[in-house]
Image (cartoon, rainbow, N blue to C red; front, top):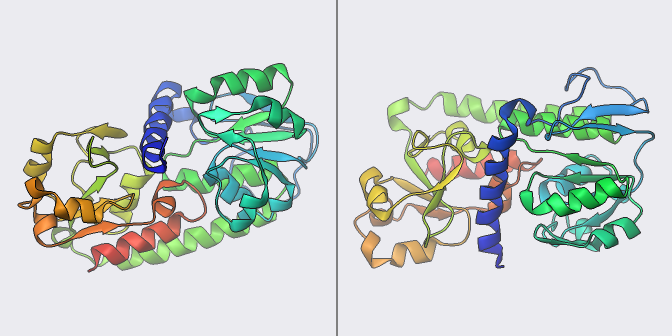
Length: 310
């Protein structure tokens, strides 16, 4: 499966499963409140993950496998990269992550390879494609923790939870404090933009199927936070498909492509009357910065803000 199709399918799978589990269990929060005063983690430690499962770690995890690029980025941002022993093929940032043992991808993991790495913790995102892996880990008594943030606040909360889980609370507090400060600085700039001057934006995930994002997703929240209006925010929750006729009805001022599609969109003959195409306000943005719920989300906000301000 190509990187472009993988991104679209992964986003759809993640949001669908979020609805099944329920909003109250999304954060991967624990019995202790996230964001409390920093300090060394005491083990045994019991926290509740995004599937509502209580996970107990008997000691500080020293061998961690990460099964999501965003989780890998969080671990390295918490200065725990040396404890990461396994990652997926999509875990490409930071560059050091590419030096780790690869245990497959989201759709083709190698459970035996995971077990051979002798992890004392596996961090995963929610996906029904991983159920067989989950069952294998359960049977093998390997602790795994599911994380699934769906808002910007929840991204920060998930970082604090992972920091608590791996005994990196000071690093987690510092990282989240910086992210919150950076986001607040951007929000202060956006606050001065009158509502009527905020551009109408359409997020394009795939040109052939016209998948986009609605409410209940951190990407839609990023659009708003960066100073624009998501024109389909009220159409539906999560990731969904619209018709070409609907695209012409909403006629967005800006089209944001989460994969390099700008040239294709501008060249599409049937779309020449769209305002965004006529004015060449179609932009490719770094898909990792806007699609991974991790520590680079503020970079994604800045990218979007710069686009909207043009």
